[in-house]
Image (cartoon, rainbow over the protein chains, first blue to last red):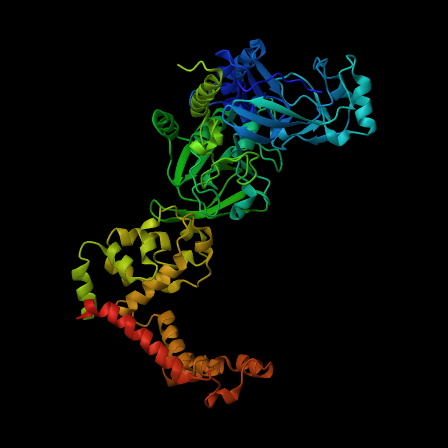
Length: 426
Length: 208
């Protein structure tokens, strides 16, 4: 049974991505008791799946490592992975949260030696690579997972494979009898940092994501550019593994579209401009085409845009692509009209990247707590939410920089509530 | 050109967009276009038009009144609805195209002899007689629209098709003599006449 010591002065943080980690650490470092609940087996969320950050083109691993170190050193922080909040009752200052913890089948003895992974032959689509690669049934979710512990896929349970994994473990770390459990945690305030998910590209029917293997999403492309990703960092075509030198990006794939997401997802323009670098850095003879309605690179990002625009091998085509077809060599062909001069085009590329937008990862209507959301499904800063405060991209489509700022603000709001409970408010 | 046309020019001297908003069916949507071009790219007849929808919308905003209203572009729309389905702002593009065509005709600016317009008139006249379209007469009217000799030629060219349709009971030669209609033809005609009056009254204030 998982023991969590908590009181109504504890802050509960839901979601262990960059926003949740930030809110939890900021609050814990002021001396507050914090419980961080994360659905995945590791912290870091979607940031851990990024290759580089914009605009500095530095590696997210760096900031994540700092946060992981902060988390390890702080005695005020309790981390529950593979756990989900299923209910919340009470009011600001005295909530009780119900948390369901799924079994990892691996305990604290794990040293991440990897013997169980070697012993197992069963493979599953690797969710960390958005299914572009396979992982074993006993696996480390990613190279810098925190906690650094293996996971046994529940699909293997009861099979010889699971037994093989257990037998391979020298540290008695695999416990196949673990059960899921439900615990109650008292808390005074809640930071809701459940983040975002990429819009389902298959729903944009004319772009053929579900039909053409060389049409991929920007999050998949991000994995492809990562040296530890599914292609070892090589930018290639999924259909035949050939180098993808002529790459097209389709902007607003699902965003700013009343048939899909109502809002502008804010990050996709910059993500594409960043990914233009991946292609031009990889191949000297690359050609990149960005199909756009308008480029939304705000503030200092404008410089980044200007630099990409100045590249000879990157061109910008003002057009929302009407449809994508595929020729006999599995090359995607983009059809539409360039609205700068009304030129009709049918352009063939090696690879098409759909710059899909962000939608809230918790669907409207499936929040386990009463909460006010807007028409896009993001959480409103409403007084009706009491002591529940949204952080990061659960509140709006935000980039990492703005998510972290927002999460710090949310931590402060939560601290104010628990201070009120403690009677230490000024 | 009609007086109505002259008066509309006077009234909306500097804003063709406002004129479209006030007088064209669904015209108030034109300003919502963000020029993404997905309608033009999605139009199956796109390359045959002088001006695809998003270009027409830009021309309206740019005040290119003559070029828009005398264009045959909106007459080329086949109502496939591809543009409406894909428009990220849900503009009723097909309906705006038909609205523009209708308005251009009303002002007397539609291209002379535009075949879609001619067909629409034949269809309307045919339907108004009995309240239902008499398909036999509709076909014949279309064949003979360019004169008797051309009509004979068209009929002979399509004779086989006609015979097959009669054989398959898709067409009835007896329809030539009257044909079937709705129960209360005069009631329908009265209703349409009333609607016409209301529409005329709405626009008459400009037409004097």
